[in-house]
Length: 302
Length: 115
Image 1: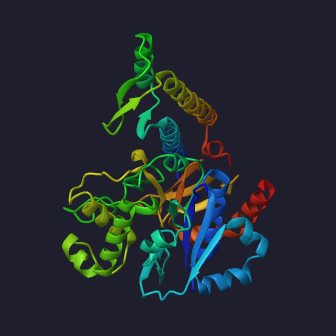
Image 2: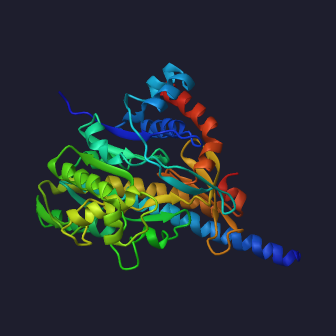
Image 3: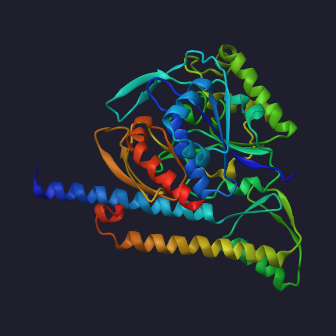
């Protein structure tokens, strides 16, 4: 049987953010722009119930090839989000079982993406053609090419390099299994690793888990034997930026705030670039229209 | 606000936006120029294409090339590899030219954003 490759997206709804809708949008983007475009939704039973109530069956069929649903207890992990520099809100951030994707993914080769990561080109198809066991972004830039914040470059001032878990490519090899095993181990001993690697333990972050796992996998050095997607950086939209227009799916216009003078904004247009939409409320404002247009486009494509 | 100052600020915003858009297009071109071959990563730029062409000119049909991660990669069919590099270069440079022309024609932010 031919091996099946695809994209996995984890979505657990909470009282404030409809991650399921984000996952549906992210799935449609992957399906429209990638060849390896089977999509598996990893979710919990509550979110699945909501999906069956809120989404037409034909939409679910066109958006998700697999729905892997499981009972899970989400430990409290409150996260402060921004929507522009002037508005903030706190909500549950359910990310603690991301390491379980190694077992949950139905694919031989998987690209795990966050539900707020929109794939606008076929860049990630390349890695599926290789024998590489693992891939992650080592670097990121923001909309105007700005460097990430300091704790997104290194875990602390004298610490190890920060890697991004927004897009994680892996196969079912022994090396990948070891990587996810270390990730799980870091999760289970979070306070110890926070002390050892000197970062605040308050918020559980999977970026930190993968950074530590890679550091350990690299023999406790900052070398990068793990594939870093050719050094291509992840493109982040800051939580304090806004998404103001989405045209033809891959043409997005943002308002990029100035970090030192946050009342100033510059318009930035991104075309055919994979985008990490970190301002969830900004995405939510566009989500209904995006969802409708994307589902229509997918149905026409079929 | 003084009209001159307002215009100056507007122009400053236009310059920043223009420079951001140019950088975006350059970044996109770099991504399109990346080529994977035999588990190696190469950039389809003038240097790589020129080197492969030089090897072919010397009658070589295969060679070991050092990729962007400093790994030695065996290329068993240099001619096919040259064609792959050409294709990536052509696609990337076409996209670059098309996008840059659009940007250069836009004389204000509205046009830059196609608003």
